[in-house]
View (cartoon, helix red, strand yellow):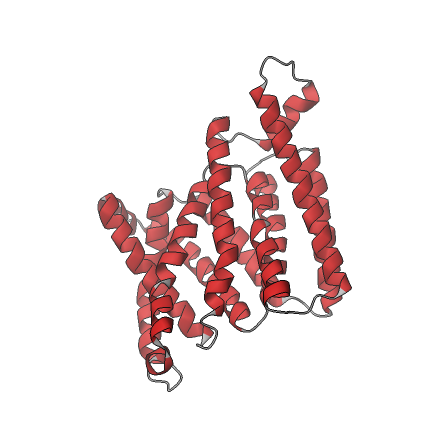
Amino acid sequence: MSEQTERNGVRVGVAAFALWGLLTIYWKQLSGLDAVELIAWRMFTAAMVMAVVTTVRGTWPAIIAAFRSRATVARLIIAALLLTANWGSYVWAVVNDRVIETALGYFIAPLGTMAIGVLVLGERTNRAQKIAFGCVAIAVVILTVGAGHPPWISLVLAATWSSYALSKRNMPLGAIDSLTGETFVLVLPAAVALALLSGRSSSAINTASSIDWILLLGTGLITAIPLMLFASAAKSIPFTLLGPLNLIVPMINFGLGWALYNEPLPLNRLIGFAVVWLALVVVMTDRIRSYQRVARPQTPISDEAATDSTSAGLIT
């Protein structure tokens, strides 16, 4: 894989994670509705959006062929279940005023993602990445101990997201087609859930305003766009780089939870987040230097620098 491909993958990944962080504001507008029903709407509308995308791209034959393969269907189901668990815990936390806990979850996620890259995919880490990994580990300990109880929301978010990232790497379908398959797996359960929940007096059908309906119907679009971007990035760059990029989401959620939604920020929490920000600075500084070395091929590269560049970079 070329350096240019990796650079493009980084840009796509940054766009995906920035959008995900800002989507907290979107979901907050729907906090008056039940979280379970919101997840069902998200599943259903995302499938509708991906059906349109598939039609425009003309890739229905690939989707149909995928659903004829038991192995591929099994992988799609696993990915869909991981996605549902991640969506559910995230939306529940946002509508229940626990945005900073989602930030903790997505700060923990790079630990799992980077570990998968090293232990499962055989990627190597350079010195800067090891330092960043240690910083994030320390921050997680500080934040977990300071909370006084197991941060189950954060742990579920981290575990499901890291595992979902791995499922995307191993998917035989292309990035967009695999996302389409996952949403199609979810569409029938989502439709059943919406039918069952619609009979309640508190359901969206009985209580949603016109603005609520616009936002509900838009959940598929705002779900599909960053997921498609992420799916592309996950196939283009090493997990040891994809992991640090995950930190963009919790940085945004941290700022929103603290500054916009007035969630508490005790000293231990602030210290933990500061350590994670240090990790992000270390990794990004290393990436900038790596790009500068590649841009100057005429300059002799030491053995140590060559090792760092290889470990940062290319997957065949």
